[in-house]
Amino acid sequence: MSSSDKVDLWNTDSGMESMSDSNKDITPVSERYDDEEEDETLVERLWGLTEMFPQTLRNHTSNVIGLTRQFITKTYSLSCTTTWCISTTAALLLMPVLFETERVQVEEAQKNHSKQLLLGPGSGSGNLGGGMAVLPN
Image (cartoon, rainbow, N blue to C red):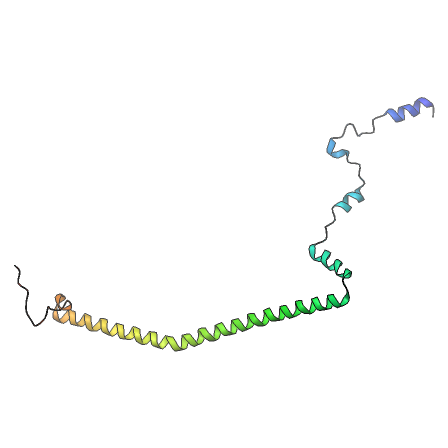
């Protein structure tokens, strides 16, 4: 190869000038994928930080979290059971009273209706007392 050939090799277009700006990224493919790896989640980072603390502190923290979870679970279970007991008891004790009250009201309504049919539409208003009629002035 002559020196003129070497110059031509260096002066030739490498293809980069004809490419658009977005295609000129010459980062190797393996490095591009490294940047796209998922970041650690907060839980993963906190779990990694636990190694900084002594084992006794980690054990106590774990116990507190476990006891708190048990407390919340048992409290929720107790509240569900209590709610069921109260609502069932109320239904069993109050429903007969409500049915009886409704039955009495229906009987009164039937009596008033039959009275109105027998005596006429004005009988439900009652009179002013003693059978005395009011005279117009």
